Image (cartoon, rainbow, N blue to C red; front, top):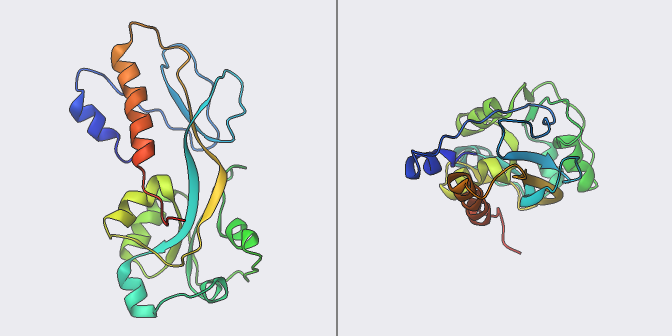
Length: 196
């Protein structure tokens, strides 16, 4: 999504109208050509084809690490001030899920920041004094550009990811098929936080 404006600049004759749902997503309906959803890909109205598996990693501004020092392990991360995103969606993973995957427990602290949406959390991480849980699909380009940096070299690679459904495309929809092809290309180019 952060790069969608590039497609519009390259193909101004192909209209792109994004309808975002904060929790879940509706099925494809008349007037929708392509749907993109996050999850396991097991929804009605398929087939749903994988675009990108998601990876989570703690990220912060480079200035944060300069000021507070490097983080060597999950125990040290637990002691830091974190940014939380409060989302009521079973597919959304937050800090508790991340620490559970690492076998780590963290007590809740009042000094942590909490936001109602991910965009606000990213903005706070870019300018603030906290660490957020970065989703590769959203902050990968910010990490590549150096605006954000991994706070701990411990990515959590999810089985879930972003899937697309373009079952309503017709053979005559060349601009829409170009969008699907472009989305696939962009997914392949989305940077990994760390190479294995």
